Image (cartoon, rainbow, N blue to C red; front, side, top):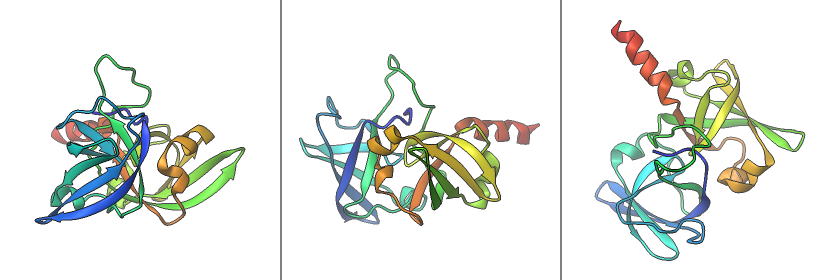
Length: 195
C-alpha cells in the first residue's frame, strides 16, 4: 500500500523478455530511495511491483503478462514515479493507493493557469462511474484530486511543486497514463450490488 506521494523519479533502462512476462530495470537515485530490501513492494508509475534485485544505481522488477495487459507499457528511457510502500508509523499525506492499476487514460489537453497546469484526462467509459468531483484518484502513482468531471473526461490541477517532483514534467498531450480509482468507490459498488 502507498500514499501517492512520490519520493523520486526513475528512468527505464532496459526491458527483458522473461517467458511472456518482462523484467524491467529502472535507474534510480539511491539518496532518495534507501534502506531497500529484496522482496519489498515499490510503486513504479502506480504499479505495485516486487523488488527482485537492486544495486546502487538500478532496481529490477518482474512484471507478469496479466499486469502488462492492464497498464501503459513501459518504454526504454521513460521517466517513472517511484514510491516505497507505506510504513504504518509513517505520515499519510495523499490517499491510500494500492498499486492495482484499473486502466489506462489519455492526457487529452493541458492548460496553463497561474503557474499551474490543468490537465484534461480522457478515461475509459467503464471507469467513469467511479470518478467523482473532489474525489481522489491515482495517476501514474500520484495522489490527486478530481476538479471536474464531464462527458468521459476529468480535470486535475497540478501545482508547480507536483510538476517539479514527479515525472509529469515529461508528459505531453496524447500520452497514456496509468490510473487507479479510489478503492472506496469499488467497495461502495460491491456493497450496493449485494443489497
